Each structure stands twice: as structure tokens, then as C-alpha cells.
Image (cartoon, rainbow, N blue to C red):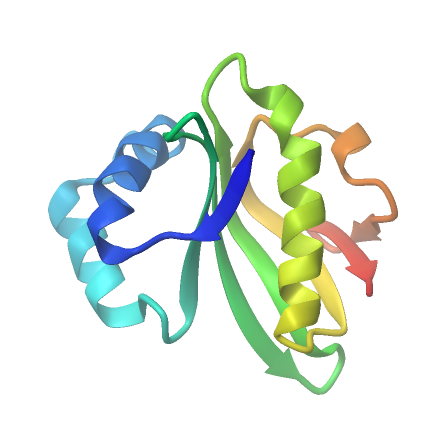
Length: 133
């Protein structure tokens, strides 16, 4: 399994997977969002197995007074049958958050393919889950 931030050329694969979570998402809307937010605020992360994208996570790094610097998992999607890879992706995202000096990681928003068992060390927080790093 290879985990990495996606290059702009790999976003077509991400869009295909994202439409399984957000069926209303159009390529124009996705392109506009990526143009405005890619690498500034929104980081597309992929998990590849044999050069095929299996898991996608769109994350944002934010800062506020309550939590300090934190990573938010905005979108999390696995292809059907790849749910067993979710825990590895969550572990990678925790390490990714530490690399960016985040104090915590939050899972919220729309998810598919992730279970409560994958969120080891997380606790409920408002409309999602949080893990202090």
C-alpha cells in the first residue's frame, strides 16, 4: 500500500471516487473547487494498491483558538471491497497531521468505507470524532 498526496494529474481518479460519495458533484464544480483550494487549504490524499487508487481522503489543515492547529478529514471514501484499508489510511493521516505540526485530527463530513473500529483512539466531538496527537 502506498499513501501519498495526489498530484494535479491524479485528480481525475480522485474525482471518479468522489462522485461515489457525492453523486451530485460535477466535473466543473470539482475543477473550480480544486483551482481555488488545492494545496492551499485542501490536500487530496490517496492510498494506492498496485497503482490503483483504493482510498481517497480530502483533508484541510486549520487553526483556531479551541484546538490550535488541526487536520480535518473533509471527505473519506473507499471503493467497495476496500474498506479493510481504511484503518491504514487513518493511521497515515495521523502521521501526516503530525508532519504538519497539528495537535489533533478531526473526522467529520461525509464518509464512506470507514467504521468506528477504524477510529482507534478517537472520541466523539460535536458532529464527528477527534483524536489528540
